[in-house]
Structures are given as structure tokens and as C-alpha cells.
Length: 238
Ligand SMILES: C[S@@+](CC[C@H](N)C(=O)[O-])C[C@H]1O[C@@H](n2cnc3c(N)ncnc32)[C@H](O)[C@@H]1O
Image (spheres, rainbow, N blue to C red):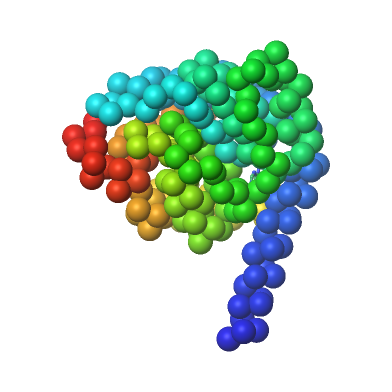
């Protein structure tokens, strides 16, 4: 039993190390962040802007004080989206080279940036009760299921009462989990992602598919999630 646990831990460690090594080889550019599809960035940001605006119209909307950008890369989402809607933003990203580029690109807005956390999401714990919106995009496939549930739970504690956790991720059309050994990630089917939300005691209060992406890419969905415990206080949300 102990030996099996040891093997599982080693396997998990290798999964994270392989992803870190993969991202270390990737140039710190928008194209690098988007796997050669840098040209979809504007469309992506437009879709995210509409989704975020719709969250400000919920019955108990998040306020616009503090956002957290998870797996922030070079700060593409902070710069083009979060910066325009929140007073202060923190970034968490495990690749130090990307964070350095983010710092340079966000230099002129430095009064709006509070913290740059150079750490993997599997080891990150947001400050309790700090955030109105926590934005996770194109990074959660790098977390193993148990770490993802744990991460979601920690995010729940990091949210203010009206806070929202946004997940924007690729979803498989095959309905199966798909494994990418090159960047050491998984793409989950909808049922799997929803199962993990439930396991983490999150309720989806809004869901939307990103439109106008080129054919051949995975479908991309946006989810607005609230901790069940907050939802019981904030009834009639949507
Ligand atoms: C596809 S890029 C997306 C970057 C950014 N979210 C965006 O949309 O522009 C994935 C990012 O996740 C980061 N990443 C990978 N595994 C991570 C982990 N375990 N914890 C935190 N960040 C991670 C990579 O270094 C990279 O910056």
C-alpha cells in the first residue's frame, strides 16, 4: 500500500515537472501562450468581456475591487480584460520567465497590480476572502483531479461573499478524457469537469460557450461558479 502511494506520488510529480519543462521551452509571447493561435486572442477577450459583464448583472454581482489571474502566463488576460474591470489584480503563474515578461508588459499599470505569485496552482493558496473574481483560463488541464478539487476549495475560501470563480477551458467533443503527453495536460469532457465542480462544492450559476473560434479547435466553455455555501445565502442568483 505504501509502495503504491509512493508510485502515485512519483507519477504525479513527473506530470507537473513535465509541464513545467514544456512551458520553459515556449517563447513568452501571445502566440506562445496560445499554442500558435495568437490570432484568436482578440476574439477570446471579446467573449470573456461579454461573459464578465453578464456576471456584473447577476442579482448579487461581484464587486470590481480585486481579481486574481490564475496560470496568468505573460499577463494577456490581466492586460486585456481584468485590468479594465477591476481596481487591483494579482497574478499567479509558475513560470518565472513568463512572470518577468508580464511585469514588463504591465509596468505602466503597476499601481493596479498587487502581487505576482511565482508558484504552481497545485501549491497555491489564495488569501482568504480577498477576491471578487478568480479567473482560471487554459491552465486547469495541468492539474490532476484531486489537486484541482483542492485548488477549487481553496479558491472558494479566497472569494468574497459575492465573489465568482470563472473557469474558461477546452472541453472534449469525444466525451472522453484526452491526454496530451507533449505539454503534460489533460482535456476533460463536460461531465468530468462538472463532476469536479460538484466534488469541490461549487455551483455553476452561468455557463456559455465561446463563439467565433476557428474550426478544428476544442470547444471552449466559460463557467461562473459560486461556493454552495455562498449560494445558500445568495438565493435567486441569476
Ligand atoms: C495555455 S497558457 C495560458 C496562459 C493564460 N491563461 C492565457 O490564457 O493567456 C498556460 C499557462 O499555464 C501555466 N501553467 C502550467 N501549469 C501550471 C501550474 N501547475 N500552475 C500554474 N500555472 C501553470 C503555463 O506556464 C502557462 O503560462
